[in-house]
Length: 489
Ligand code: NAP
Image (cartoon, rainbow, N blue to C red):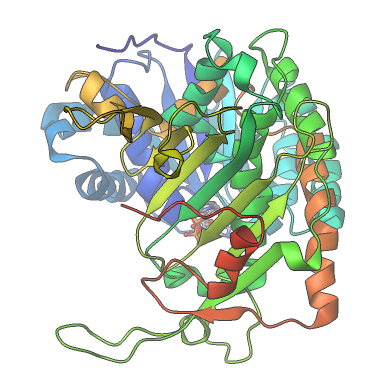
């Protein structure tokens, strides 16, 4: 199946932080791919801004290098790259000073969509919003895109919302959670609300429990300083995993339209139960000495350069949703770094049949609908069947497997999350972006959990790199008579 590409309206997209890591790895290669796909109209332009002094040629060379490094070889076409680079300008601009703002204003055109991507440290979001107004660069229809992290607790998120609200309406603010731009995450909504098959089963009567796993094999890498101030709860759970949970648990919105979807997600977050001391396990990866054929691996504390760090690189927790649909159904969330495999998965485990007519009870396995976000996006439904052969009525489980990559043809054009989300900004569609009240509600849930472990002065449990996380996380499930799914690549 080949996907359709619908060009967007002409635009001026300003990327603040246009020389930064995110711009280089994701935003600019993504825009090039959209250009190649024919989604950018003739008069779409990209203006990068950062403090560094460089001329247009130097900036274009920087972007050409980013494309060479981060775009797949099959998509690197010399003529197309040149045509894309011709759309780029660069203006040295200081968010905190007056440099560059007049030049930036002079470049902006009337009659096209104006979007401003704040790909800079969150401490600069307020200054950028103010400057855009002070210099009359943003108008009532302009959009701003803000990156994560959106605050580090409820108070800072509220303050940030208030700063942005001083200059922009909520309909102009696009808070990015790139998980929402993933194909499978959107498919979650299609699976639930475009099929009559699943929805009757999607409740406490039929669902035993839900597991959401985001496992990474990498450590904190070069992000040590930021990560050590955040930890897995702030970096993953409060935002990405919360969004996944919302899409699984929310009621059907009356329409697939921004506020209808976001209203339903908000209701889920507000209905989340607290998480008790014994319903949460925090971990920190240990180091590994050099062994046969493998180099020594640093521990978390060595990676972040803070020997006394109590920040978690792993977290597992159990949470409930206090409403009619989900009463009594536990949602188990876990995420961590330096784990056995890289996998993101949502697994919905259904209850056992009310009565078994077969002798072989112990062969019975639950029906599980597993939705994989990575590495290969797809869905698997495990069902029980009769084991083939003449050996009587023996049961065995069989996966009904659907890999999206297998089903879509090679030339299918599946944009990555950032590409899709940037095009949604230009289209003015906020469905896949977080609303201010959603973010605040998620912090209102997370804050007391974080405060509780900080009050207890708790140290995270150690776990070995390449493992499934701390032993205690297994107990979280075993106590309930359940087990985590294997972290398989
Ligand atoms: P980065 O590599 O440190 O880049 C920061 C950018 O901001 C640079 O282009 C820098 O250029 C510019 N800048 C700094 N001070 C400025 C000022 N006063 N005025 C104008 N520009 C200024 O950061 P990043 O990794 O790209 O991250 C950008 C944002 O995305 C952050 O909010 C981060 O949390 C978020 N994010 C990043 C990733 C990622 O994978 N990198 C993932 C998720 C979210 P000059 O020094 O030349 O001014």
